[in-house]
Length: 127
Image (cartoon, rainbow, N blue to C red; front, side, top):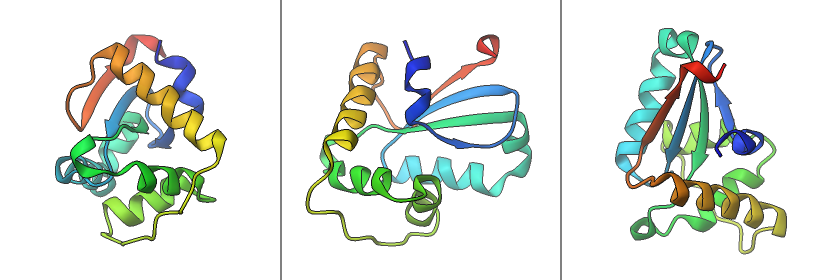
């Protein structure tokens, strides 16, 4: 169920163990988790993080999520926002492709029962 989403993931790390992570870019717990990965080279050497945005409705982050996904380097933009605290202006509208991507991720997250951020799934046996 989650493997088809890999095409949408922001991959971070070079490890052999896959870690699927659902975060909201405005969630302080998600930001702490991404900062921890960013600051820990050893973790990035053990795990290959597949990072997906999944909105917590109370943060109203849909446009920010789409703006990061629309950038030329989503991983770099995510790090600037979530680790560096950079404020970016959300795009006024998102492309149908980005909306579809967000929708596909939302659908899988609901099917998996993702109920908090960050939400982590370690998939060592799926290598």
